[in-house]
Amino acid sequence: MPDNQNRINTIIRSCKLISRMYKADPKVPRSHVLYLQMLADYYTSLLSAKKQKGFVAAHTIFFPVEILYAMDITPMHTELTAWMTALFTGSCEDLLARSSATGLAAEICSPYRVLNGALYSEALPSPDVVLWTNLICDNAVKGGDIIMHKTGCPGYFLDCPNSQTEKENDYLKQEVLDLITFLENKSGHKMDWNKLSDSIAVISRQIDLFRQINDLRKCVPSPFPPQDFLKLFTVDCLLAGQSQVTEYLTLARQELIEERDRLKGDTSVERFRIMNIGMPPVLLLGTIEKFSKEYNAVSVSDPFFCQWGEGQLNFSSPLEAILDKIKLNPVMTMYGPMDNRVVNMVIDSAIQYKVDGAIYYAHIGCRQSSALIKLIKDKLNEINIPVLILDSDIIDVTITPEAELQKKLRQFYELLEDRR
Image (cartoon, rainbow, N blue to C red; front, side, top):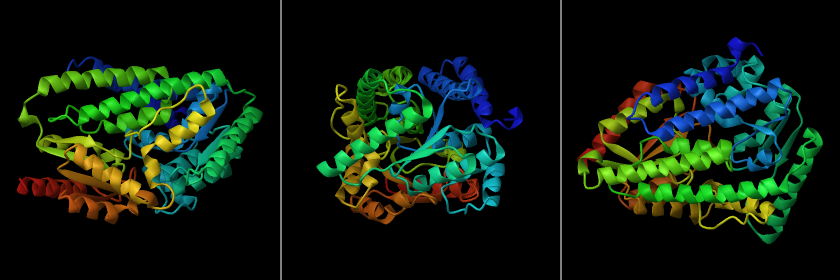
């Protein structure tokens, strides 16, 4: 892979540079430094695996990555790697154009278009296997086919039933066992069930920390930084069960406690409490944060990310724990036949977190979240919570130019001002 085309090296260098800048600034929370170090280490491990002929598995979103770590297989998260490529390089126009030239339509989720363009441009390493699932994204269902077609590597599709009857749970259990057999045959690495059990115990602790952090976000005023929910989501997707995540979450929680105590009684620092629904455009995060600060708007709730359901994981039964973790994931409310779970979760979150308004990032490539827009908007309006529907794309800024986003955000915050 030519070094000047290698976007992974760019991610690593950018993380290290920003980390050094953060270390020199005593006002920057130490958890931010640790987060960047985790990203740099994750992608350094990926490059090292390729150079040393290790075994790399590309996997789609919500895949149980703890299986790979227990087998000493190096993971490469497909969607988040595309996001990080955009975020730390500043643009993916060339990769989107290359993907378009191969026939992928603009309506396809942009992370997969970036991934496709990157593989054709040799800007990302080719994996040894690809693992994909139907949790919960229909783009992911075809994403594995795209990678196999380009790289020629074998793949395994983890088929997750959309209900949790005993029969369907038995089916999913066998799917996971077949997946492990597939990986053992292709990689030569055996599953270490003791290591997986230890990882599940760590994940259980991490879920508890996520819950404690979410509880701290309920405070008035909230101590939570405007866009840090993306950091929480990222560390869980990339490094679930790894000790660095526990260290990061513990530090982030302590920083929130200290900030809560510092802000106690100071009503000037918080004017609007905002719920985030969907994934914001990563290349416009700076603009979104700028408006958050200008209007003293704080992010208090993101019900589909890291807001885990009730229940614990039994690390003594790691296979069953993997299935239970899937059920606890908040995005599972969007999976399968529509019922009241998704609406109830959003409404309950809006009430518990004392939300003033919601921003719905209507990612053009996401059929799951976009299909829920009217239902969720109507229900939030019923409890007097206005919703900004922001048509956008996670990576492709041509969908929502920055000037248009600025205009809509200003109008929304002025609407909230008028309601006071």
